Image (cartoon, rainbow, N blue to C red; front, side, top):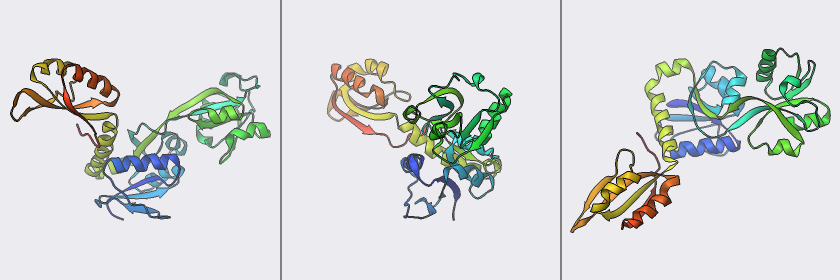
Length: 287
């Protein structure tokens, strides 16, 4: 294995999102079927595919240098790692829920001795210990939502993003332990010993994340309209202005625009007499 070693989820939606981000960041990977690792085409990084819940320990124990996983998983494992970048996807919440007909409407209503099923026993125990409640925690590896209906638990502690699965299983949320999203994690010694490589990796990810909500707009506009254009199209600093060969009245502008503002910007440009408008995708943007 060569270069910085990075653990990422081996399957599921999070794996797809991470793989997509790496590709957009220019860290192209060719993953072979059933392969446990792959190198980026530039040879600077080796990506290792492992279970999401194992990633913090892989990083802590030195198997890999960095990892990408959920913040909830990092907190549950209590691994000695640092979160160094929020990735703004994989958003979810670790919640407390019970049957819709339950008399419990908030966590304060939960009595001592209540049975709780969860895949997050450490976070659950810590939360209820802080409340001074003595509850019975049963660790389950999946299908937590069905445990109240089966009589295994009075309460569940589980991850949810939309709440749909809870509703299907006739459960109501009565509390929240934490909010989570995907994060990049590292061991403290890696941040010291491999600082330049880590910074390069984070910069590549940020460049793709920054570009995600941007578009690159090009247009020919009357030179007399430049002052007005700069008001609603400030760009990163100001629009790039280029003269047109053989046309003293018009100039070309190049500018980075927020994706959500692109069509409003086009409408304003057309009112000012703009022509030849082009909209391009921005792959990466490095401040």
